[in-house]
Length: 111
Length: 119
View 1 (cartoon, each protein chain N blue to C red):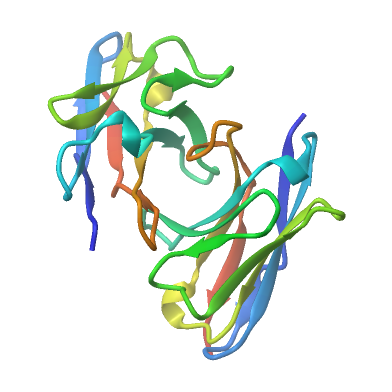
View 2 (view 1 turned 90 degrees about the vertical axis):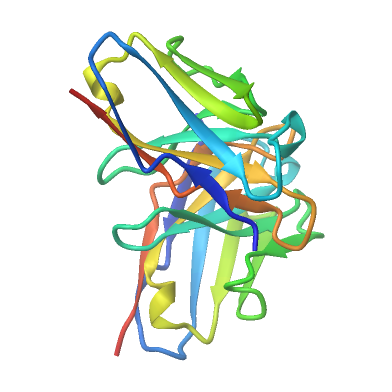
């Protein structure tokens, strides 16, 4: 069973920078896993932020960026705003019978 | 603008069946693959199912394979999730999501439909 691991929680100060990571139990994450990042606020549907490692949607704020870092997918928030407090999920694609696996999510607190 | 609207959620007894629909608008539905994702109360996101743009290929999570079937009717711009042999652990909000044109990733999500499996 493939497991995708994220930090359970992180805290950042307003205006600061924070990096969330996404690791795979199968080994280093590469662009071939097509990493996605999603934001979810309480009571709302998820919102797509980053696709295929580092591509932004038209609505994605410039302060969000995606990358590969040390064998993991990464989401960096630069100049964090209070409204960035949310849960963040990554999604990876695998060849096989169950191609898509979500990470457990990171609860980001802006304090 | 792109809209995805789920319907069909409700309360069902264990062992029962339910079909969710996702009505799509604002894009060429027949050109895009679609996904179902669920979220149990207080838990994280779980990928459930995928259907290819033409409805010709599907993939399922291990937890639902053999019990759930997804399909898309491109003439009605509607995605479906037929759920049978429902269990308490299937209780969740079910979201439909649209793939981006390059595949493997999502852009738009529906607002979700709550399915509660309880006697």
